[in-house]
Image (cartoon, rainbow, N blue to C red):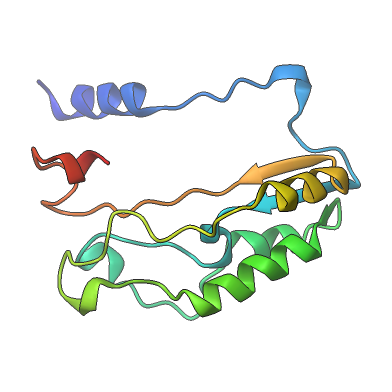
Length: 147
């Protein structure tokens, strides 16, 4: 198969479309937004090797970018809870060895009460997910490679 055709096929098969039920996106100006997921607090670059070893001056993270948007009101209580939790549960780099980091970083447990209180003071929620990916590790024929 010609490389161009293969790339187009891969892009088409890998695309994820978001169903915008009830026209919830884009968020309306002034939306009170709860942001969930530990990956909101850091720029998650991975590659289990060269792809993850990129050094840049500034690593923007999702929560900082959202907080700079004057159209949104980010829930400061939940954001602070995630920042505090991540400080106490730092990024697991797998000991610094190539391909050693886990496929998923430990996620902050959520109590039902926390979720209810957060829902009561916000209009919408956003969940930020991240996963490690990298050369010769995420495509292996092993259960942990697809977890």
